[in-house]
Length: 314
Image (cartoon, rainbow, N blue to C red; front, side):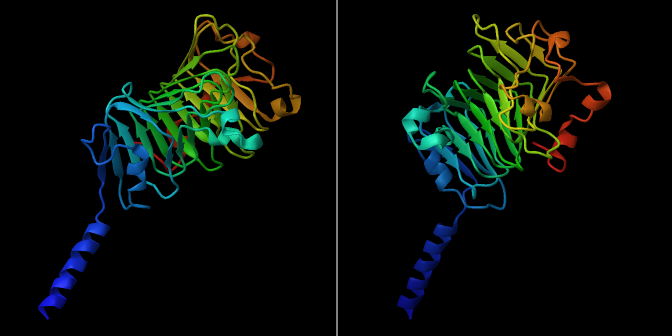
């Protein structure tokens, strides 16, 4: 009888340990945390948790490809400091070599899950100027990216997902061609976009029928010293939508502003617009004829509450 009770007690302890849920996990390269790898920490979290789980990442350079899986909802990855908590890898199109869709496998960090937060991180694709090389790919809904640096060259940020809403605040992105691309509904607030080449800043692919695409509010567009011809955007697909509101544009932004990617049909279905922008690169009288300068009454609809509806980012 005593033996039976003892075995039952051991089983209870084992099961209790197995089912314990940690809502705060620390990653540190010096073994002072729970894990030394960000991905190992993510893989250890509970699937579809009942409340927010935070993975706190101590300063260091983490050479790994990180994936937040579909089941890792309500997950926060928070760095100790933006400039010293670095996630980096160097995959690019030819290196991946998986055919015409190789771009989508090049990410340094991929967020598949809904309700995720990234904060105080530098997310870098260090492949260099060698073609498509994604730093951050987000396709989950209701994802909030705060105080992060997203760095690469071509195709730096892939904001994707037919039903995805993404909020970027107080971030920096730097790249060469199509630095921000995809079909998500995304707001970029107090965001710095730094161009490292004479090319295109955005390449939206907004789905037909969606009310909003890429929306930039109170952002600043800067560039390397030698850059003098950067376009605000070109349509990756028909119905592309990109709006700049209250943004400061340095003189590297070309007077035409927008490019049709040599496809006049897509230019006709796209909606490219600006409102109340400033700077030497803001030349409304010289913009392409198929772009728009919004009236105040139209610009008023571009608010967080209206764009994201029932979601209020933290």
